[in-house]
Length: 190
Image (cartoon, rainbow, N blue to C red; front, side):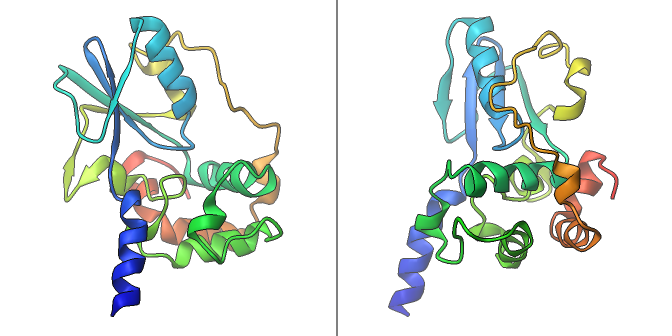
């Protein structure tokens, strides 16, 4: 029983939502969905930005989601191949030599509350229970429709990797099954 309590305490840090606010906007951060570029853009546009674990009182709250196939592939490239991560500390089954298929199998087996923010189901970040936590959800692929983000041009962590080449039909099916709510609620096609 002590091992279970220690395990849960260790992973509690993954459950919170990360909010950023400046001026009249509050942004709900979703990792691997352009968040570094969006936070930099808000700071540049407003002159400052503040961070918290609960929503700020702002008249307009928004978030940006990303196609789950692209998001999970980007996570693998960034955190495993490029080694820009600390996932190894929290997940003993993650290692820098694992294949993309092994990585996808491993993260798809985890319950949502143990998923680290870089690969957590976006639905579980945007919705609390059945209530959407923001006024508007934008797709990273269609930011030009956002009145606030339409002139954002900088993409800070862009990879040159051809993500589609990594997605076999089997891997796509695993991602779809695990992230089905992201596809359904945010308008992405299987």
